[in-house]
Amino acid sequence: MQTYLLEGCIDSVASAIAAERGGANRLEVCADLPVGGTTVRPSVFRQIRARVQIPLRVLIRPRFGDFLFEEVQVQEMEEDIRTLKDLGADGVVIGALRPDGTLDRDILERLIRAADPLPVTLHRAFDMTCDPAQALEDAVALGIETILTSGQRDACVDGKELLAALHKQAAGRIHIMCGSGVKPAIIEDLARATGIRCFHMSGSRTRESGMIYRNPNVHMGLKEISEYEIRESDEEQFRQAAHILRQLYG
Image 1 (cartoon, one colour):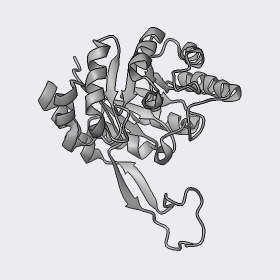
Image 2 (cartoon, rainbow, N blue to C red):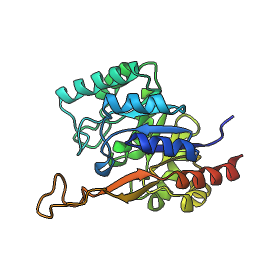
Image 3 (tube, helix red, strand yellow):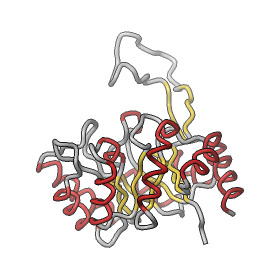
Image 4 (cartoon, helix red, strand yellow):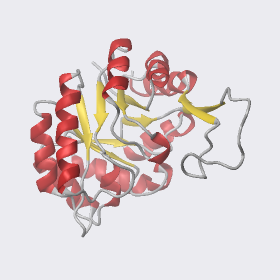
């Protein structure tokens, strides 16, 4: 029986393979990790599904930015869920907010219906809610299985107090999964400080692009993100994290 969860957050075939080899026992599959993740393309999901054996949950997020969605975007998400479910997804990762910072239960109910019978993770839209304790109760009422959270801070190490409180409040009714800045070096401290046994990490490293000619006057996207640095999951980081969790929980 698995007593912990190490979920790899990945946006490429290479990262999926590395995370599984390193010891991840589940993956969240997405695109565009440098901007927080968006919905994976079906073609990429097919390639990952064909190459890894561990469960795959798919992030459903139509765009970068906030979690206040228009009707057309909700319909896009419903269609993406049905498409990826048909392609073999084992679960979905969703989130939506109202303008007042509460969970948009109406939209979430629609997405959960589209995903049925797959299990559902509430993503870090949770970290943008105005009342995390109430958001947890709303998630439980919706039948959501897992909440991914950093404790409403940029890095989970700074959110340990809230993470511990959420884990206590959950009381086994819903899983609390710690994410954002999870690294092997801090997992034991996080686990002991919060009681959480579910961890979400990208385990990323940067490698140089193979491009020789590089035009310094053009940026193809955000200027803060170099086109010539490729971020991929590092098998060794997952191996170290998995070792630590096995030592803690068997």
